[in-house]
Length: 274
Ligand SMILES: O=C(O)CNC(=O)[C@H](CS)NC(=O)CCC(=O)C(=O)O
Image (cartoon, rainbow, N blue to C red; front, top):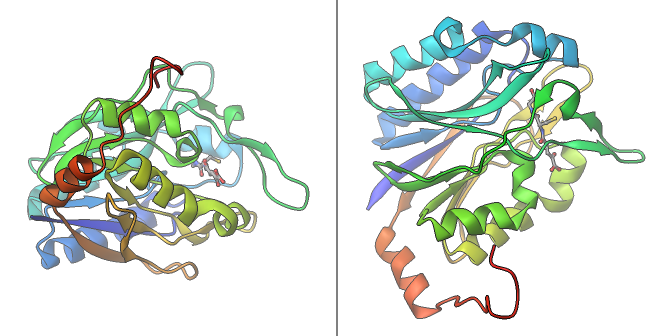
């Protein structure tokens, strides 16, 4: 049995402020004895316009945010999974997720493949593809002290195919670091997360942004860790903006019990394999 921590913050366009929040969470998570900390999408910053999103992007070697996280990781020997932006081609950024091992090295990277372009009447209007380049390859699971992690990001949560593909590649924990909008979060967040855990028979760790990032945008929060049976093991607030963590035990024995007691054998002779 191992202990995983999920962290919740409210990123703004100040990377110094966002780094300070993440450092507090790394310290708090280390104090609980957790073996890994999972932080939200876009922890480095959330800007108020596509042009600001593009102008703030730095490569990891030049990002004070990433270097600051790496220093803190080394200090506490606590690996961290964190969402950031990186410069891309054609005046765009990549929405990426990096795994920093306990020695502060970036050992895994995933670039978000589904972009959030929506225009909901009376609700959010967001065109992520104006500033973000979409990823062109499927994520791969990787080894961590808490289990084999299959990374995805935010809007990817709505596409069961990506979770199922990670499960087929032997993921044990699927992550959904996010910055969900409040209306879509109220309607769908918990249901989607629990569904992904149940259908993949995997742990799900969903670290979320919470509260007002700027005058135009707020996020839903409600970070969660869910078991392969779909139970909520840990959850954080839906409002506020204070940095918070929660922890849960990751029991791979339970995961294998769930998978062997109820084998989800696909009928790929009748429908396409996903
Ligand atoms: O903008 C940044 O810098 C960071 N990226 C995000 O916040 C992204 C794109 S706007 N948010 C989502 O995918 C929300 C999905 C969502 O809310 C849903 O599926 O309902």
